[in-house]
Image (cartoon, rainbow, N blue to C red; front, side, top):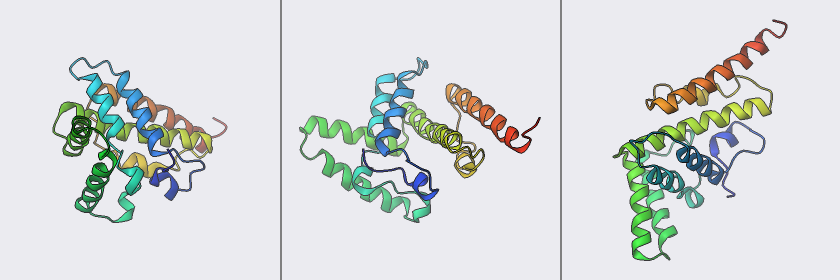
Length: 176
């Protein structure tokens, strides 16, 4: 609950969301999906565990220049530490969910990965709104280019971009 999302900290966002805020909103987004081809409960569980290791290793951002292999190694050790007091069955379930997300080997894991990126740009949009700085967090949007394929997520991203572009245009032409 107290680990802030690194990307927002690096960009000097006031009161950045925590990793748990991020995972909770992703779980809520998974809860309201209407895609019947996905196992909704599995999506919710994937969303709730996908960044769990960050409470120990921190939110490692691309700007930290830590290799994917090293990041995975640290997070894997953290997942083992976090689940060590659980029963064997629970430990296995949580670890397998985390691995499924990491390996992107199921439709649910790929959907939740897209939710991860979508939640990030939704959060960026909210920060630009709160700080009245339309366009300031463009690099977060740029980092998601081409990553959305799920129709429901594409629709939400399109709505976010439409609203954001209106705000940017209004700032560029305040008297139009």
